[in-house]
Image (cartoon, rainbow, N blue to C red; front, side, top):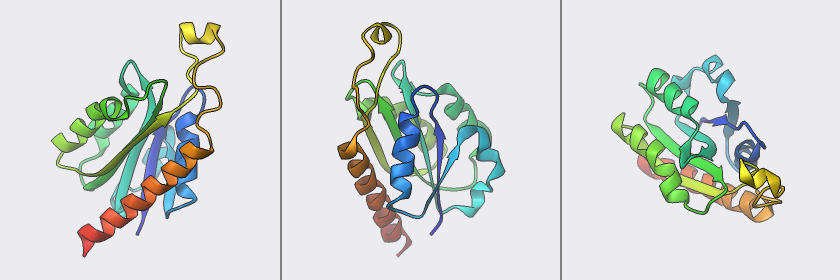
Length: 155
């Protein structure tokens, strides 16, 4: 089984840290979005997409990448970090895009991340010390569940 996580993590590397934690628990290669085209996406059984949440959704560059380059593979998962706890809502736009492209969504994950955007910067940010050990553990449990779901679909 080959898995790839494509990550756009631009401010505090919160989402990249989550992807790296996932890679410790599963056969997951982690690629920054800017390097994703160096990978043959068709060689992967499962591809995940993650970024921080900006104005209620994933980074726009991630949407553009999916629209332009993601036509052949089918099994996906979505993940994010954000200042809010509305993970399902935050991930919904990206999930809907993938579903519109006939992708199988194996799961969706979100956790808190340090948020220093706009007014929060004046306060030193919110969700300080996040992601933390509990967030990393949850991310690892999530990626293990993705492996299990893929294996169930395959059998």
